[in-house]
Length: 260
Image 1 (cartoon, rainbow, N blue to C red):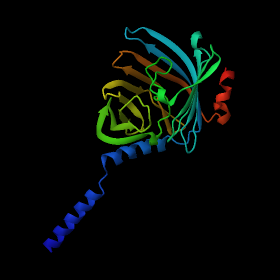
Image 2 (image 1 turned 180 degrees about the horizontal axis):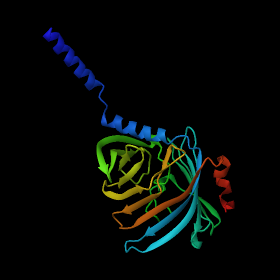
Image 3 (image 1 turned 180 degrees about the vertical axis):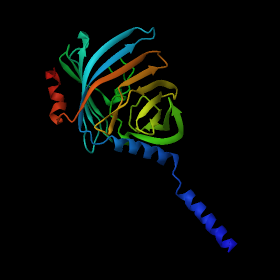
Image 4 (image 1 turned 90 degrees about the horizontal axis):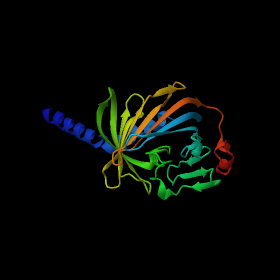
């Protein structure tokens, strides 16, 4: 009887080992759950304020409006229109994010009355002179990365999963990103970005989360600090609105020149 119990114990132990979740599986599961919890918002609009700081701490400010459309079976669409200051007024940025193919992005420059397509090879370039790259402001589709769970950790009193993401798409400016995901909201509260030499390039701090429609969490402040240039950019959001009736027609690249 003792030998039988020992054999059963070893069998159960081996079974647990066989079915143990790997760090990669757990990291992917966290990302999938975060994406699942943020599905179903439809469309949204908000006001956004950008503060750029140079290495000496001097500031310049910009004001814009953003709209977003959730797309089933693919990445989301977003439109950003600059209202202030005067030298960028009327500039518009349109992004069609895709899960498995390169994103489509266009920039309308009012001074030239020209719509410029952003090359997929230029996704690591700075967005409007900020410390945010074009790839940072695209929707973060699960399929665009591989994942690995690293550890649990508290940050600012919040229990977080810490996971590593590595881009699977071409022309990324990053080798990897380390994200702290709040266990309650399943939203990132901090992200570290590592450049192509695998050196720490930037840190993004995300705060002021609020819940909308009793389900969807949105941050109201993000600060991106570039450790190599000593520059930083802060984004702030106000007046979030959801399910306002936006449609595909509101995200037509051919209408960029007519936006107001």
